[in-house]
Image 1 (spheres, rainbow, N blue to C red):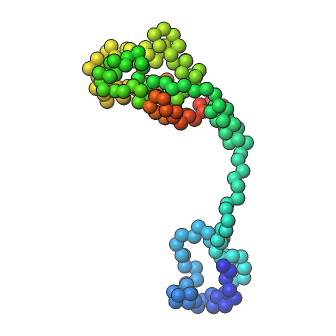
Image 2: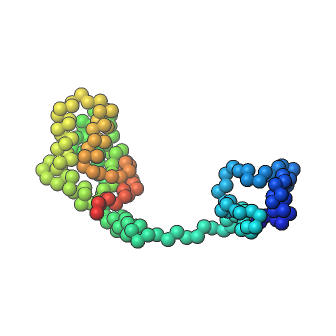
Image 3: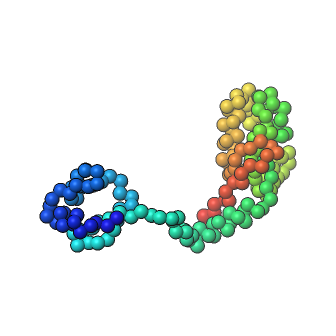
Amino acid sequence: MYACREVLDHLSTGQVVLTRGGALALPGAGLGVQRYWGSAQELPQDTRPVFIIPWGPPPPLELLPSQKHLLAKAETFRKRPHEQHHIFPQAFREWFTSKRIDIDEFTLLLEVEEHHRIHRGTKGGPWNAAWRKFIESNRSATKEEIYRYAGKLIYEFGLLGVVTPYGRRGLLPPPPIQSY
């Protein structure tokens, strides 16, 4: 919309101008949300548009080089092989079952190397060792305490991912963030 000459003439004299529908338009009065309004105008001599309606799709976004680099890293990460990791170790299936926890309902999709890292060593590695220690000192733990400990371990081991049932491919976690 462009301001017409008649409106400009009335505004320059300080008169109130009737708008379409009979409402009053007071010079300088705010009209609420102005998302698509042009810049402030120096009426009456300014002829820039008063109201802009964006037609069509927005222009494509140009990514910064750092964003392109992160997207490339994420794509490389997603192409690496992944395995499902039981949050509640299979070695202690009987104990978890006695606590009414189905361990096959709680897995994370991890990179193969990450999965091997947390299980590397004797008797299931540090992941199973942490659970073994918890189970031995918390034989009467409640289901809530067990879940809380699982969350604590996931945090301490720096694992990321969506919890999904075993056998169903979950969403891949985002690539690890490295500080520069």
